[in-house]
Image 1 (cartoon, rainbow, N blue to C red):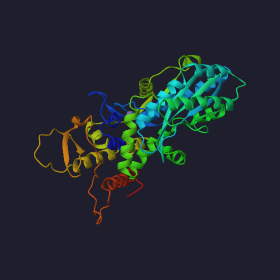
Image 2: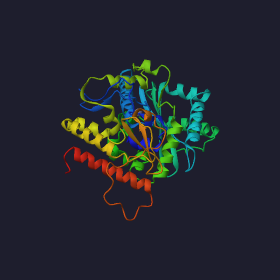
Image 3: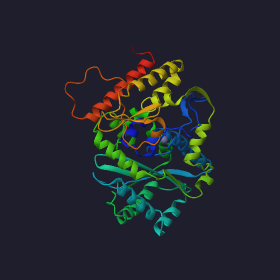
Length: 416
Ligand SMILES: [Zn+2]
């Protein structure tokens, strides 16, 4: 998945995630967590992006989901009620995601400040909120929305009554922020505690690509990772790549969860930054599976990172031979350069547009990729298709996926 995102948006920092070493003296290793038995890389630079990186997002959101669950449990211990508030606004296809998000945030600011907001808060004894931003893409274009866990002390609160009063307030705030008027039915909804707990238990799973079956069935449009998935499947590649880039740009630098002041302290939840969470992950006890040389790493990092982790978990004894094959294949796949160039060994391959043009760079010079990278097949296809399909990018991606599958099956000895 990381390679897919890399090819969609090569200048984004997620394209450099798990690509180069932390420093020249760092060893790149595959290690296996002693508790979860999951394999992971060690010694690589990571991007830390909660929005665009399937690897970093999975690690960070696992921790955040645990914090949300802890907050709900602790609230119950303290006799604090929880409900889930959701606010949406009407939108149409073609509207800019960045503009919608900015207006939504503006509307939220006026919704949560001022006299009306104060009265509504006091009426239910609100003690704090945790707001989460989500976005999907559906028939009517981008659909950014906020989910907000509300913690309150009013035992006998009539949630339907609150929904009506707060809904009217939200409609006014959205309109004054320049948005279309939210509907009375869907603009603001409040669901009770059990629903909030269920929401939290599923929170963050959209980053888990392995759960794609569950995710496909969800109503209300595609998540950004669904969009990247569809790109990888060769569906509507230009459009999906443009959508992904728009999403990545609009969410750059945005925080994902906002805890209201004092709530973490009240619910005894530790305050850890995303960077601290990732650093802790790196320090979890693990045993070494394999240490990679730089040529081995450059031979596998574009297309085979996930395969190596699968091998480390399932068939570590095959890794050595497999790595040797990858290094050999990476040398073979370098065609002679168009003109003599001064190039240092070891070599890596950077494919550029249009296909067929190839640049040879010293290994270390591609640590920060600036151009679009597409995997080339290690061996040329035996029979070029007589009738080339209309979309070269889609067919290249399809070939790449088939090839990756084949290599993995071979490595596991499933296929001759
Ligand atoms: Zn990352």
